[in-house]
Image 1 (cartoon, rainbow, N blue to C red):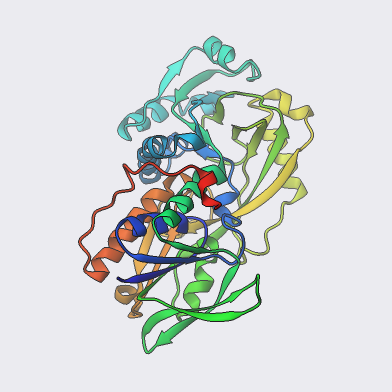
Image 2 (cartoon, rainbow, N blue to C red):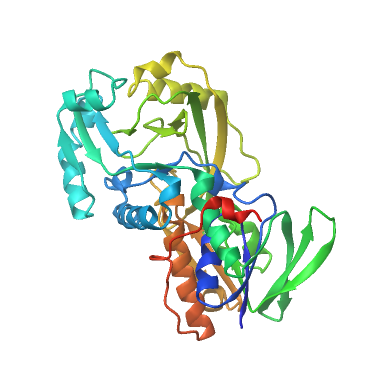
Length: 384
């Protein structure tokens, strides 16, 4: 039985689940707590894809397809509350027809509703909005969506090891044959051998790949999010324009999440939450829900997106949110290493499927993906 070692406790959980269902022996290591990186620190939007239809059709299609799958396999983690895209000014209004047409092209259900109906659905909405469009967005709990993948993977035999940091990759000639780790709970170092190593380190994927002497096109792109106490809306509220700063408010438990800012960074560990970003979020989100303006922050945090570079753009909102996986044997003549980068929490299952398909081809295993239909165990089952 081939042994696959996965580095990264975010999207790596979905990959561990997929590979365990396909009969692989799986070990996953994460340098901190599971989901302590990007996957556990987003604003909790289960994308319909509509947020990307104006500038990133591939990501929009991926999100809508996965939205429907996740509703089936992890319903306990999702609040299917729907979303609104609203035009605040004439510039926003100019995007209305292109937005609706692009949603149709991506098979995303979207329709315009009367502003009066939008105000009835979201009484806190800016009464001056000029148009409102309804889409099948949803809210999700970052941990309660991802942990069921870990729970189900472990129930199917995967070994999950948090607080185990990779310090080196084991190289035998041009082949990666495992990794050296340090277990931060015990202080002990050890070597884990593997037939294949998967680099699923998110914004840290570049550092992990460098341990094998290869480079990957990953760009850390931090962003700030702010929560305020109370649900100002029962629906997700977006601004009707290409995705940018301060243009989305997501209801999450008893909070409202204001998102988000973005910039490019070299070091995913040196991520701050600048005060001016917080102020900007309040100013911009108040144009959607004016009550935001008078509310104090409940919490402020930031996280680095692992963007997949595919062009020359230096605009973090223009870089695609799609994903890819690389076989370094074909790409860099380094056998035994696969890297998975890009994507979003909404597409973590699809990212795992694509990577697992690649791993099956590499190992000669004829095994189809079963994660589209397999209902995940409840997140509480992760703990014994």
